[in-house]
Length: 490
RNA sequence: GGGCCAUUAGCUCAGCAGGUAGAGCACCUGACUUUUAAUCAGGGUGUCGGAGGUUCGAAUCCUCCAUGGCUCACCA
Image (tube, rainbow, N blue to C red; front, side):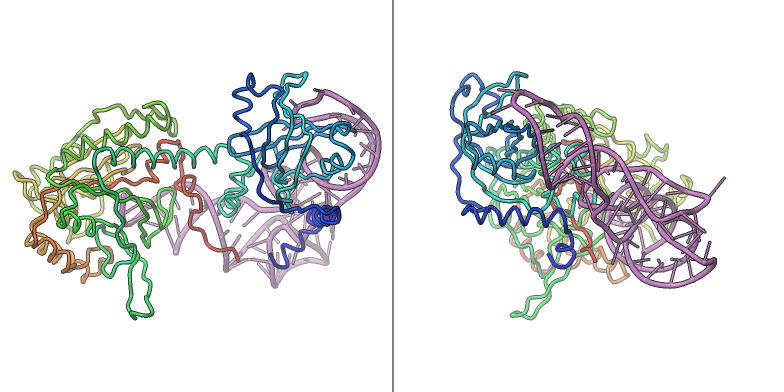
């Protein structure tokens, strides 16, 4: 905008001069509403119908080839591209001048007859054109596109213009979310919205962002999860609810983490985690099929197969399978610590058996899980909101789905015992007092809600960005978020 | 936050035994009335990310800083 923008000099100057020329001809370089009668792609897909018909299309000029008193250009709209043919004899000298002055990147509207060139390319023989927006900045190169990842993220609009596969990813993202909504709506779930700004951030183990409300003179946290509010709705009798929206976590950024990310959470009264397993694999495999037209997708050299049913493995069995360590016979904290150390892992002397089980799993098992797999039976210490397993009260009726070494979903039978919940929160609060910034805060209001009676329920969370990464074969979360978090420049 | 790597024209990239910056595309001028990475003839449009330092001389070597990527840590 400021000095640097003005210094862009030659290329920009030339375009500013062209802009002035358009104005001096009495033309508006930043035009008005333009009524199209079709899209580029439709003409190409249905040439039989469109041949010799008059088409009105609008879009961006992506390339230009001039030959004296005639020439070509390619126009791009949301659906694709089509070639335009301009001929001085048919267009008139004035309009042909406009074509000559036209820059790659300009937005124009045209009307003309659909035909096929001698070389066989479906084209529009333009007999009228109007300026819709003059571009003052040149587009990246036509052949290599925009490669610089930093520019791609900072100027996503340019990325979308010149890299068609990027547009495809975000179209698929939209389709996938729409399919999820359709699926859940059909099953009688109610979509709801709960607070993004919360006085007590709960429902996950994470550090929150803090903000401040001036009129109330109070700090609020951006939510790390909607969970505790959605379960209050179960208390209220909304038996099947879901929410798809952003969560915010004040943590590191990586190819798998963006500070704000999209999460699906759903809760179903009178169900449990096994119902959630069936729902999860059905929901994801259906959505993947609808978006890709296939249950298989390639990701980093692996073929991921979403075909159901998915493998189900108890967490301790998975650890035993991949490390040889059997935690069923390591039944106290000390022997668990020694077991983990025997694998070469560093273990805190204060770590409990359940925490160690989790650490061993994350360090040695996660990386082995390529195809969709349910891992169930998490220790109670790392699952403060999940119902205990009846036979093994030190474990919970909880599962996570792993695909391509990534955690995609997390679900459990919801803890609806307010007394147990109170105790779990107390333990978390103690850890918090001991310096664990990610431990849960005590939420008295949530306990009070539980005391009114929450039905037994299954709850499920799915990381939408990560699911879209898988379904579109995108290795970085930034490839599926339109405007990923970046430091501002300078 | 740590480690490694990158940053040169609008874009994609060369140039680095240190000698004062290049190519393709884009752009400008001209030719060409069905081309398509159009072609042909001419034209480099630059704070070599920023600031110091070494040197007669730095895009190139050193230090610090900035931004980004990968990775580790933390999480989803």
